[in-house]
Length: 359
Ligand SMILES: *Cc1c(COP(=O)(O)O)cnc(C)c1O
Image 1 (cartoon, rainbow, N blue to C red):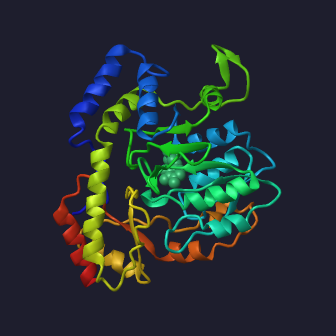
Image 2 (tube, helix red, strand yellow; image 1 turned 180 degrees about the vertical axis):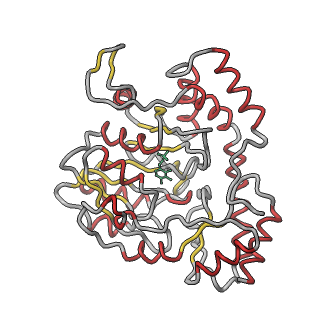
């Protein structure tokens, strides 16, 4: 069997266990010293001035939008190919998601489609750095500047990724990260963080995640209850130390896949358009997706589809007016992801590619 990923702690096991023990013995479980230390360390790792830990990546997006004053009546341009949570977070703040189709090579928001989607109501752009590769941020920032729009980067799949040598999350006013267990930096449960450039916005994000409280039991504004707890913060601090090495390992596995898959005719491998790619996933496209995945499964190799349905085609978004996304429609019909995780042995990549050559 080659699993799609490996979630149980490996080389980080002792560090994770000692983090759990430390928090248990301290007896301080919410909004304490681990969270504060993690926020400092995570901000440094992502080259952001400030980080604020929250309950999930979805909440990180929603709180970032709220901090920037985005809400009912506003439109936010985002990508149709992503985890649906990107768009659900926009809807959580009462704004309307507007989908700009993806670029067929990069598989992230097409800047020309984003420019064409701007209306008088557009307040922000939410690009998604999908699969670990950045969206085309210079082009997206140019549109945002021209129309005076806020930019919130969805970095939930792109911890430590760069775009043109510059850290993702450093382009817009705010960025959102998820620490869902499968992400490149994962907790043993749910977790998220937003990073912000502005100190006042960071202070507001800290209020909003804690019910809008200014002082204990004094709620100055409507907030949510979404805090990164001490146990997860301590575990993430331990794992953050491993993240650069794990990222290198993901890149090495991706290089092996790329050279081995170069001659496999049933597949199209999306090109690496930026060396700052962190390979959260390794997606490939095939017109014979079902048959190829069945061949892998018969060989004991797991694969998953990211994502089978463009977000605007989800029934949950039926109330939004239908929006065109032809490229995303095609990609969703062909894309699937091959196993890739830091502890994956190199010979497993060879076994996967051999099975694909015969599929
Ligand atoms: C995982 C993910 C989210 C949501 O994060 P949660 O922590 O699960 O709420 C949002 N956007 C993208 C691109 C993701 O991959």
